[in-house]
Image (tube, rainbow, N blue to C red; front, side, top):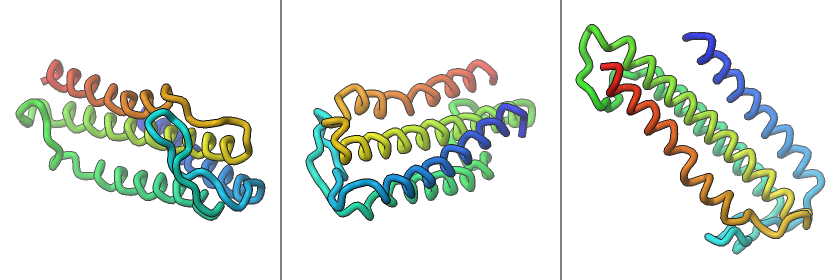
Length: 155
């Protein structure tokens, strides 16, 4: 694992720890009922008890663990090029970096959504806004295109 990969992993872990600390703080300050879902226009359309504040950090932690485990077996990934002895190290490194970057993006997005849920519950915001939803859909796609293009060029 290279220095950049270590940095990405450290950022992932730091964000997860920060998310759990934030959830602990938020749980002690939010009202009994909080928004739990937002519609396509970013307005809250479902609510639940404040204990649902723990769901997002739990999902985030689980997805991080699963992607870390998945990243340990790059030989089972699908690649846009044929894997050979000559290109295997590059392709596996490129693919595992892509998974790390995606993991970081997902963790950051879930953390931001958790903060938005908190701010809406506290009456500091009315909803997510449509831009957040658009970013949440588009942002994870960017590294996939970038690393797939890099894989095709590096073959």
